[in-house]
Length: 360
Image (cartoon, rainbow, N blue to C red; front, side, top):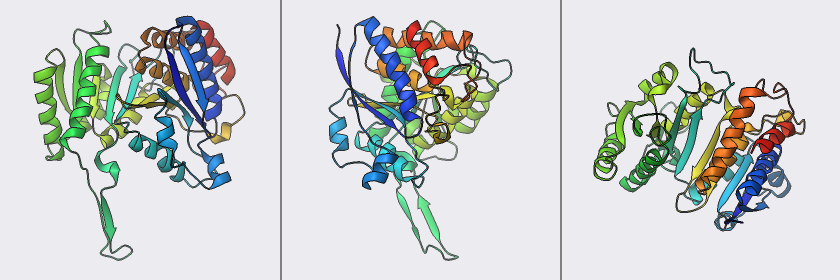
């Protein structure tokens, strides 16, 4: 048996527990095959706990979760709780308190999955977005004055310091060096593209662009550097996604372009993400949400949760195990799955998990 990892599991709300069960099944198969030890501990954070106790997240939650090697999350969002309470009180709070300053979102079209992009396939839709995850406009710097009057003023500022920008860029350069297209044998260069808006947001993205080129030239001369305006990026994500390798961008721009990327790879049912603290504990989750109307029906698509489990293995350094899970998912999307939509896959939630686990 190799290294043993302590994994905190937050099944969460709606169909979250169902997809986590299938991800856990696949993790156990990978653990057995590759000699990895996994100790999983469940936490009941979510809507049911909030409705029962009135507490969104215990004050000690972040300290408790820091004791683990990674966090595996199902979904947050409960129909009985006002939108925003759980999302801000659990997801955003954990991202900030655990300093998960990178949001990592692969945009990867799997074989057999339909894309709305004409004449594009898995070879063309295969890139990764590195989003700065704890700074920028989402920190809430600003306020409202004279609220409710004709002269009401609302201000919310995009604020970044050099430290935040540089640590995000360094992560992105390292990722491009290790997992870029050349490193994976599918291109002739490892390319990092900075996505910004230097022609309008001339203060914030002047900082991003200067740091990008200074760090790249000095410390990562082997990684090719490119710059793209965010609006042009959106156009080329639709027209020529094959241009991209690894993209790095700010919090707000990353939020927007990753959802665009998700629909090009087949939708939220296959989109996985990681909230990364390279020096601490990271959290991995499917992007599609809790889908409460399908709760308990055993028809929800678990592939995004399974792919986020693969991302967790990769981040833990268990690369062969992560690749085995990825390859298993590719095999069943190419040969078995009819649709990513709930109830239309041709198989139940648990049957999909079984198929992936067997192939691992």
